[in-house]
Length: 439
Ligand code: UDX
Image 1 (cartoon, rainbow, N blue to C red):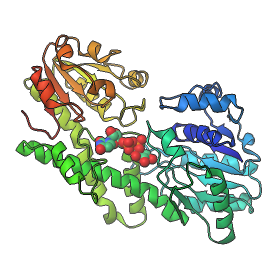
Image 2 (image 1 turned 180 degrees about the horizontal axis):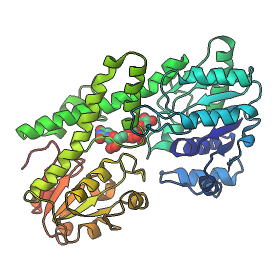
Image 3 (image 1 turned 45 degrees about the vertical axis):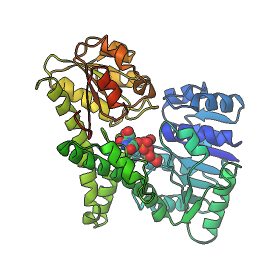
């Protein structure tokens, strides 16, 4: 098939490369000329495991190209809309500027029988509004809502082998035609056994924000338990293991620590609350406000803990921060808990030296007034306290005996419950974590 992917960020670039991998002839379109040039040279503009190899293969094969010109969308059977929907400045609501601009720019190039497939995370009601725009410009064209559930760091695998497909379709024959196009696009041996939920536009839009709200709630639930564990010197990791054995609950997304960040969960739950308010259902999602506050409290608690172990003041203390990305295997620092903690420690007079295996270039731009180091050992040199804030495997694998030789004070705060407390304590460290016993 000939396929357009509009928006080449984390979602779009991966989607475009994966569609080309499935054998389609794909053009990725983005307004950012630099990003397009980089992708056309088969260089991933961000860190995502597996993407560089995939880009290299698909660009070289000629099945994938990139452009800034929307006219290149002409003739595709499916146009995927993958642009961002960030949080509006100073508000909770999602900013739909990029979605509206993408669809508006596409309309003049849309041919009969072609499908516009929305993948961006949008407030419920957006798809029917866009469908009306499409119908007015090209009455024979179709629109479907086809949310994407990929996780950064696993984006290629999640796109090629998703847990499920969700199609939000119009009624009647148009819905059948839209479904046939999506089926044809995704038909691969890998996806043959993938569950498919076909539904209406509004349910498909809600599925995505409901899933992210549930995941965020699960994380904040366990972090609330961590707060209680701290109050009574109990262990939240054992608690999570124990409740997670109940398969109605499940162990996934019960890792207590610094909480969630990134470009999706925080802004999606806020946009969901804002949309519920607009729909007159303000009360329905007030629990998400609590989910958000529990999450933000964990960052404050981490800074308090750092101050506590530094004898009540961070002024002049050298603080090694391991991790800047919002999670491992990503260079994304959007709403990163790690970076937020680093900034707060700096504000309280700490001398922060931060390291990250992939996100240093982004962190340097966002937080220019702290110091940076290439490795954990360099960051920890002369440190009064070491903070593990993003659980990269290299930090999980750190040797407590070797690290002890470079620090000034043997204090480690494990913001992700990623280390073995017994091992660090045996090597002479004061080990503290969120939601775990003091000793
Ligand atoms: C999320 C959803 O998982 C994905 O389905 C959706 O498409 C986009 O949003 P992503 O933001 O890439 O994906 O990351 P995810 O792996 O979900 O982690 C989100 C945040 O939660 C990270 O900051 C992570 O560190 C944190 N987290 C996750 C926890 O604090 N504890 C956990 O148990 C799991």
